Structures are given as structure tokens and as C-alpha cells.
Amino acid sequence: MKRSRVLQFGLMTALLASGYGVMFTVLDDFRTEYGIEAHWLGLIVGIGFLSGFLSQVFIAPVADRGYARRMVLAGLLLNVVGLLGMAAGETLNVLLLARFVSGIGMGMAVPAVRRIVINEDPENLGANVGLLLAADVAGFATGPAISALLVPAFGIPAPFLVIAGACLLCVPLVLRVHVTEATVRPTRRFAFDLLRERPIIAGLMMGSAVFLMIGTFDALWAIVLDDLDTSEWLANLGITLFAVPLIFLSSFGGRLAQRVGPFRLGPLGLLIGAGFMFTYGFLPSGIAMFSVGIFHGISDGITISSTGVAIGLAAPPERQAGAQGMLGAAETLTGGVTAVMAGVLYTVGGRELAYTVCAVIMVALAVGAYLLVGSEYRNRQALHLDDDEIRDPASAVTGHA
Image (cartoon, rainbow, N blue to C red; front, side):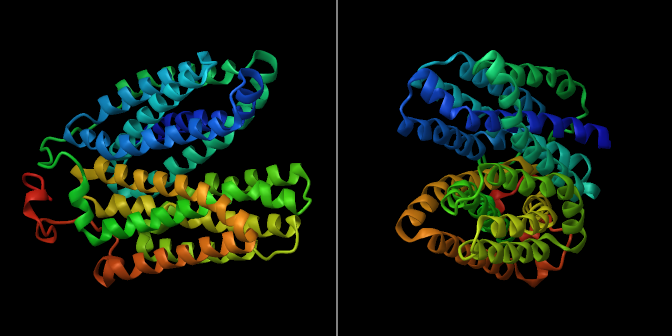
């Protein structure tokens, strides 16, 4: 696949993510302008994660059955419907429905995009998966900027309408791009049978560890820095600077993971990340946390792509959408649960407890993934499961695992 085509899919991924970024920044506006009580705002956020989880588990595998392009288009259009609902809605029920629809759309589109990009250019799998991750982070980070520019002048609906329009402009791109659809279809409707394979489970463990870290970081960063009497601008700048290395280094990190092996680079990056998370619990000031966070972001930028690369290399080409959907579902579930539990741990035992628990679980998942995958797969860059490596023939696809 030409680099320009990957960039087009990256643009679409960024637009999908930017809708999430906008939503997080207008929650307070929902409360003040629409009178929605604070405790319902969390439900508006959570229902999108729930629908995304369900979509990635139960709908995403359809892309492996010869419908990858149609899944991208359907997911893109559903996301537009959800964005329009967020723009028009002024009541809780409408906003909840819109978020649910948007989550379904993203859960359909993103795994299908990854399937197309991975299978069209397997030699550059690492760089392309890293580019999609960079686009996702860039889109999410751009959302608040779009809100800041448009909401004061044009009102709450404006950013949602702009992003919906931009998503519609991506439809012709999806229609024109070459897509090699599946010629043989999996005999299993869902991707649960892939959980029998150690490399897949190890990849999901790595993804869960990443989103355990992200969920804890996002949930506590602003609160902890505020409690340390740190300036608000520094707290906001810290989040931005943490995202910058992910944008610029993820493609390089993906290439590196494909070259040295994702089950080597990924666990190493997670152990380093766990060390950074642990230090956040004991650093004396917000400035110190900010300084450490810069190096943390660089480390993650180089290593986080390993998770997507691991699943991309481990899953058979004709099961990519299902496998990537399972990864996204595991990440979504872990991130959502972590965001809640991190706040509880912080309330009970302060930042020392919250960050330490996160670090310990990250270490356990990283070490577990490294050991589970075994030396045979850990030392291979091409991990695609062959017929004789699938333990249950009923889970294979006709002619290939």
C-alpha cells in the first residue's frame, strides 16, 4: 500500500479520535448550558466505551468475511450520525444515544482500517501500525483545540458539526482506495477462538498494560498536580507534551518493533513505563512530575506501537479485523475500569497507593506476556500462526489458519 493511502486512513483515524477529544472538553458545558448533573456526565463518557467494546468484539470480525471496506464506510457514517446527535442533543437521553451510536461506529471502523493497512503492506506493518497510532493520538489531542476555537464563538454544536463534515469528506477516499477483500471466510463468526493462542493472549496482556497506564495517567494527572499546587497551565502542558512523542515517534517505534520483535520491545517499554508511574507517586512537586513525564512520553513513543504490531504479526491475515477488535476491546475495557479504580485508590490511599498499584500490575502483565509467548515466538519477527500451530482445527479458516 502506498504511503499516501496509509496517510489517508491515518487522517480518517485522527478524525474519529478527535470527536472523542472534543467530547471530553465540553462535558462542563453540558453541565452549565444544558443542566445535566455532574454524576451523569461520567455515564455519557462510559456508554461510548461500552458500545465501542461491544462493537469491537461482536461486529468487527465481519470485516474478515469480505466486508472490510463496507465496515469502514458503515462505521464512518455511524460516527457522523453520533456526532450530529451530540451537536443537536440538549438532553441526557439524546446525548447518551448519540455517544452509543458513535462508539459502535468507531468499533466497526478502526479494526477494519487496521486489517486493510496491515494486509495490504505486510513488509511495512510496523511503520504503518505506528502511523495509525500516531494519527489516533494526534486526533484526540486536537479535539480540545478545536473546541477552544469554536465553542466560544459558535456554541457547543460547532466542533461536532465540523468534525462530522470532515468525516463525510473521507467517504470518497475510502471508496477509491484499493482493498483486497477476503476470498476465504473464517468458519468462526467471532474471534474468541484466537484466545487459544499464546501470542494473541500475550499481545492482549501488553495492550491491557498500556491502557492501565494511560487510564491511570489521564485520571490522576490534573488532580495530583492541582493537589501539589501546580499551575493549571503546567498541568495542561504536561498532557500535551506527553502526547507529542507518541505522534512523532510511533511510526519509528513500529518499525523497531517489527525489526527486533514486538514481544521483546513491548515488555521492555512497559517495565520502563511502570518505573515512571511508580515515581509519580513519590516525586515532591508538580514540576518534578512534569520533567519526568517528558522522558516517559519519549519512552512510550518508541515502544507503545509494539502492542498493535504484536497482534498484527501474530494473527493470520484473514483474521486481522477480529484480532485487532479483540485488542481494542481489551484496551477499552481496561482503560475504562482503570479510570474509575484509579480515582478510588487515590481517595483511599493517595497518589502513592494509586501509582504503585498501577506499576505493580503493569510489571505483572509485562513479565507475564514475555514469559507466556515463549522463546520460539519471542525471537521471531514473522509470527503468523500456521495450520500446524492452531491447536483447534475447527477454529481455522478454510485453506489457512
